[in-house]
Every structure is written in C-alpha cells, then in structure tokens.
Image (cartoon, helix red, strand yellow):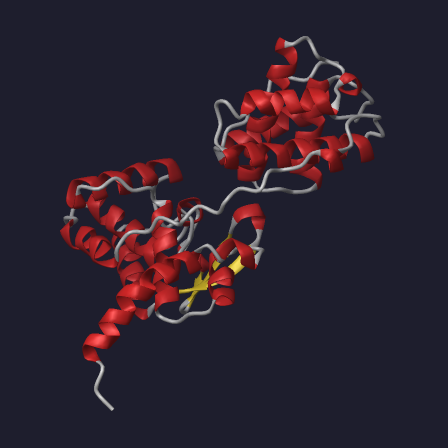
Length: 315
C-alpha cells in the first residue's frame, strides 16, 4: 500500500476532503518503516484521533511534506535508517532558506512525528527528546499607532466592500482576534457583549465586545443579512489583502493584519491592564508569550515621564 502525495492546504474544505481520502487509504492501520507512509499515518492520527484544528493539521502537512521530499531527494525511505546527525544536516540546510522561528516550528512538528513513531508505532528511530529547538530572542512586537488606525477607519468609504474592510479592521483592533478567527466568527457566537471564539488549536475562549462595537456589528449584520452563518463573507486570505491595501491606500504604510492584534495588546497594556488578562484575551497558553509587550511599555516610559512632568504641579 502506498500513501498518496501530501497536498493538504489551509483551506478548511480542502483539509476535510483530503482527510477523507487519507481515511479511505488508511482504513486499517498497518506497520511500515517507510517515511512517506508514516507521515500520512501521523497526519491522519493528528486530525482524527487528536482532533487538531484544520490549520494545525495543515501546518503539520506543510512541514512534513518538506521533510519527506528532502528524504526522497537523498534516497532515504526507511525511518530507522535516519540518524540524529542526518537530522542535524537537514536543519542545517533548512535554516538557509527559512527564518529561525519557522525552523523551530518545523522542529516541533518533526519532534512530534518521531515521538509518535517511537511510542505509537513502536519503531526504533530517532529519540524525539534529542531534537532541540534553539532559543531565539523574542522579536519586538510591531504595532500600529492608534491615530493611524483611526485615520484608516475614518477614510474608508461607505460602499459595501469598504464597509466590510472597515468592520474587519475595527473588529480586529477592538477584540485582538486573529484574522483567521474573525473570518470564522458567526453572529450567533455573540451573547450580549460576550463573543465565544474557537481559536488556535481548537481552544475555546471568551472575548468581550465594547457597546460601540456591538452596536456596529448589529447594524452590519442586519444590513448585509449576516445574522446566520459567518459574519464576514470572505476568507482569511482575502481579508488580509483587503486590510493591507486599505492601510497602504489611506495611510501610505505597509502593515500586516497581525499588527492589529499587537496594537490591541499594547493599547490594553498602556491603559494599565495586567499581562494575565491580556494573555487570556489573546488566547495564549503561556504568560511568557505576552511578556514581549513589556518591551513596548519600557519604550514608552520616557515619553510618559516627560508627559507627566509637563503637567506636574509643585509641592
């Protein structure tokens, strides 16, 4: 039996379709040492048994596809023949064309794959505990100034497409959701000022809406008949392009939509919100993930000092 070619993308519909194909091929789990076939059984296990989100499954597929293709090019087909030194060589080559963060992400996938092969398939292959990620300096979060966001919101016109863009930007900045999460939001997920979100890794969390944003959503959903189904009639890729073009058109700057998420966090931090609350609202598992925003707070200390001194009274 030969596993099909890895081809899953981040499209939810495509992921489901491809998994059905895999399920037909791997209807009975079989013992193999073939790297490609093991990769497919691992993807099947991740999606069906571990019930990972389509986005997480798609990431695993992309990383494993690169790994399997590299093995094929060097005529490596049996997983028990791979050594830790050989894996070091793979990542040495991988780092030449990928960022450190992407390399670490790939290492986590490969580590999970070898752990599954060892523990689930009882194969004598590379010990996953020996696959170590490099510690990288946390990048300084790039955020967009509040007045720039407001400028773009104020300049978008009232036609249907630009009103959708305006709503997407306002939604992202006021809730801190990822664009992929926003694209899947339904009006029915809203209960009063609470919004229930299924986030990264299929983890559920609650975020809160301001009264202003809730009123705007109500009007938007009514005007465009979005009271059922997804609130936005677009996918996350198109939404990202729309947002980038709007900032380029109205503010003449290049941004990534994820910067709106950073801007949300920085906005809360400056207002005195504690890190644990920000962590919960962003849907991060570890507090260390949001500690990067403290760098921004340090940067603002000087300007806040002079602003305070300008208004300070003698005593």
